[in-house]
Amino acid sequence: MNTSPITRADCHGDERGLLQVEDALRRMLEAVTPVRGYEQVGLLDAGFRVLHEPVMSLFDVPSHANSAVDGYAVRAADLPSSGQTVELVVVGTAWAGRPFTGRVAAGQAVRIMTGAPIPTNADTVLMQEQVEVFGERIRVNEGHHAGDNIRQAGEDLKSGTIVLALGRYLTPPDIGLIASLGLGEVKVKRRPRVALLSTGDEINPIGRPLGPGGIYDSNRYALHVALNRLNVKVMDQGIVPDDPELLGEALSRAAAAADVVISTGGVSAGEADFVRNVLSSLGEIDFWKVAMKPGRPLAFGRIGGSTFIGLPGNPVAALVCFFQFVRPVLEKKMGVTDHPPIPRFQALSLDRLDKKPGRTEFQRGILEPSEAGEWRVRKTGPQGSGILSSLSQANALIVLPHDAGSVEPGERVDVVPLAALL
Image 1 (cartoon, rainbow, N blue to C red):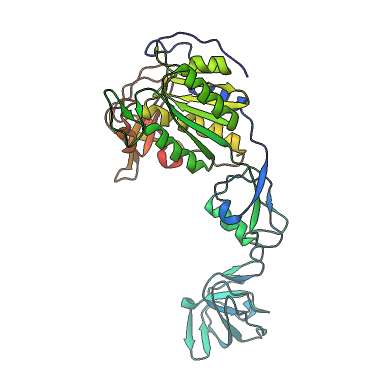
Image 2 (cartoon, rainbow, N blue to C red):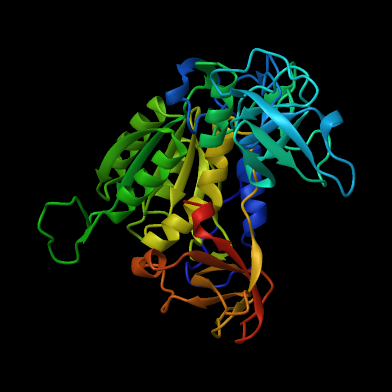
């Protein structure tokens, strides 16, 4: 790992010389490798896992030409010419599970339901709304074309094609697609083991009365749920007090069992922030400060064979850093190579957004369409990194670039919907 010397810059001081967000993420991704190993799991357990090998179609999907609508299967040769009509005799019915077994002769039609195989000799389906029915006969007007309303065999998938690539993060539509191939199991990569712990004498577990200066441990709960959404194996290590010896033991124990160790708190420049110093004695530090707000104190390194990420203690900063850094790192650890990018687009700012050049800022916003359909965004109020309600109320992050200054109302800003990150 490429290590950098530790500097003693004031946590609230000059941002010069700090890693920019993009550089920090690049260094983190370059430093991690996917986990090894795989398992074969049933399809119902494969959701949000990562494919270990490609999924290939062994037959055409659909396997036979079928009707896209409820209507009547006919021969294109019997369709009327311009300005004319024809009458056809209905000789049977084709159902999705009970095909019509006869042949469609000249002057004949077969009542057909959506999904039913196309009867022999028929090559066109007329929608039931487009014909007149007279007992066992139908009247057909002009305007129809050969092949109308037929889903051809292999229209969805051709036999022998790769359906889902190696490294695909399997979503519900992917699971349905695999099921349509008749596959009940798939090979998926091993889930990364992620150890999660909170640090600080002021951190209290839920259920214990708060003492002077105490706060409840919100970070571990929020991050645990965020990790569950990625379907990694979470190893909850609880709360570790501000004691270097206890902290060293906890980090060593976590690193021995996990692929990734995530802590919150203890990575700034305060006298009681021990994580950074303990990490220096146990392993390696690549960096521990990033030019961003919230989330400036961010430690990244290794303890033995485990990747270490030290998140800030303030709850908004911890979650924003999770979205920006931890999630992409874990996706690489999971072996994800086939994943759609996170959407980012521009919206009209309704508020003044204060910002200093020299750092990337992630402000919390409420994204909504105007009556004209244009996206606009307003901030959720005070943007302090300890105000967790500002993130709970938000549905988007407003991303203000490194070199940008303050934004005036009516200017456009980049936004990332939180739904794409959660």
